[in-house]
Amino acid sequence: MTRESWSTQAAQLCIEGRAFIDGKLSDAHDSATFACTSPIDGRMLAQVARCGEEEVNQAVRAARRCFESGVWRDLEPRARKSVLLRWAELVVQQADEIALLETLDTGKPIADTTNVDIPSAAYCISWFAEAIDKVGGEVAPTSTHLLGLVTREPVGVVAAVVPWNFPALIAIWKCAPALACGNSVVLKPSEKSPLSAIRLAQLAIEAGLPPGALNVVPGFGDTGQALATHMDVDCIAFTGSTAVGRKIARYAAESNLKRAWLELGGKSPQIVLPDCPDLDRAARTVAHAVFYNTGQMCTAGSRLLVHRDIKGEFVERVLAAAQGYAPGNPLSPDTRMGSLIDASQVDRVLSYIQQGRDEATLLTGGLRALNGSGGQYIEPTVFDCPRADIALVNEEIFGPVLSVVTFDSLDEAVALANDTVYGLAASVWSADLSTAHETARRLRAGTVWVNCYEETDNMNFPFGGFKESGNGRDNSLHALEKYTELKSTIVKLR
Ligand code: NAD
Image (cartoon, rainbow, N blue to C red):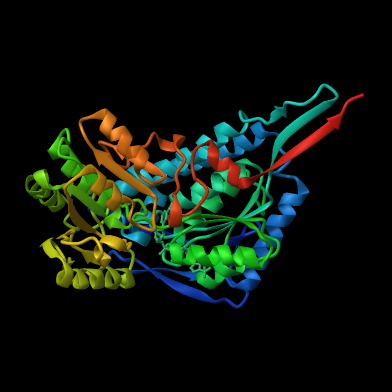
C-alpha cells in the first residue's frame, strides 16, 4: 500500500460515530454530538454521539441485565472462548480498516497501526479467550472434616475508561480479560480518539457476544465521572493521567467502593552504564523508546541517565538516531513518527520546550514541523539537563522530548532513576549481567528492561506501575485478578 492508496481508502471510509448500547447503535438522547477531527491535517472525520448521564445509565442498565441474565456469565468457559476467538478473527479480517481509522483519529503512522496496534489487539482477545478455559480454582488445605474451595467469580459490571495514545489496544487490554471472565463492560473511549472502540464493539456483537455485554459510550470527562460514581458499576478499570486517576480513586471511595484499577503516568529512566555492550544499538533503542508514538507513551523512556565517561560519544549517537524520527504524513508507509494527538497537546509540549530552553541546553529539535499541513507535528527534541530538579526531568511531557542527565556512579544513577513519583518502567544497559540484575532489583518500577526497551513477549508479562503510576496489572493471567472476586466455599463433611 502507498500513501495514495491509503488516502483513497480513507476518502471512501464510512465512519460510525454513534454510541453502542445494548447491542445497538444509538444517538445521545438529546442528539448531542462532538466533532472528531484528524490531527494529520485537521480534516473532519465524524460527528460523534456525546453521551451524558442518561446514556451512561442506559448502558449500565443493559450491562447489568446481561450480567444477571447469565447469558454470557453462565456460558461454559469454552463457549465464551469460541465467541471471543471469533471476535479476534473478525478484527484480523477488518484490520486494515480499523488501522486506518486509528491512524486518521490519532495521527499514528499507518505502519504502526497495521503492524502493532490492531494485530496486538486481536492477539490480546485471542490470548484471553484461550486462557479462560484453562484457569481453575484451588482446594484449600483443611482438616479432614472440611472441604474448602477457593474460586473466582466475575465481578459484575465493569467500566473501562481509556486514553487516546493506544485507543484500540488499551480498550482491548481491559475488555478482553473482563469479558473472558464473564463480566459485562461499559467502555468509554477518550473524546480525542473515539472511533475504533465503536467499530470493535460492532464486531464483538457480530461475533456472537450478547447485547449488553459490551457497550461504548463516547464522551468527555463528565461521562467518565458518571461511570466512576455510578452505584451499579462494580469495578472501574482506568488508564490515563495520574491527575484523573486520583479523581477516579476518590469517586470510587465516595460512591459504592467499586474496585478501582489505575494505570497511570510515567517518567521512565534509561540508565546507560560505561560498559554498555553496544553503543550503536543502545542509542537507537534509547531514541525509539522516547520517539515511538511521538513520545505519547506512558512507558516513554523520557529520561536518559548516562555515565559521564561515555556521555559525549553516546549522546552523539542518540542525536543521529533522532534524525530518523523526522515527522512525516502518517498515511505514508515509511513514516516512523506521525503527529501528536491534537493542538492542545502540541501547546503543552511546546510550553515544556520553551521552559527547557531557559533551564537546559537544547541539542536538537524544539520546533513545530510540517507547517502548512494543518496537522499537529513537533520535531524529535533532545535537551542536555545540568540538574535533575527541573520540569523537563521530573514531569511527564507526553511528547517527543528526551532529557539527558549525567551521572558519575551506579549509586547516583539508581538514586536519580528512583527520584520520581512515578514507577512504571526503566531500563539498564550493561555488559555485566550481575550489575544489570542488581540494578534492576534496585529500580522501583513495574517493568525493567535490560539491554533493550519495550521488548515484550506479547501478553505474558503483567503491565503496570509502582507508586503514582498506579495499581493492578494489565496483560498476563494477573489481569484476571482485576475482573474477578475470590470466593471461599467451606463445606462441613459428615
Ligand atoms: P486523561 O487522564 O486526561 O484521560 C483518560 C480518560 O479519562 C479519557 O477517556 C478521559 O475522557 C477520561 N476522564 C477525564 N477526566 C475524567 C474525570 N474527571 N472522571 C472520569 N474520567 C475522566 O489521560 P489522557 O490524556 O487521555 O492520556 C494520557 C495519560 O495516560 C498519560 O498520563 C499517560 O501516561 C497515561 N497512560 C498510562 C498507561 C499505563 O498503562 N500506565 C498507558 C497509556 C497512557
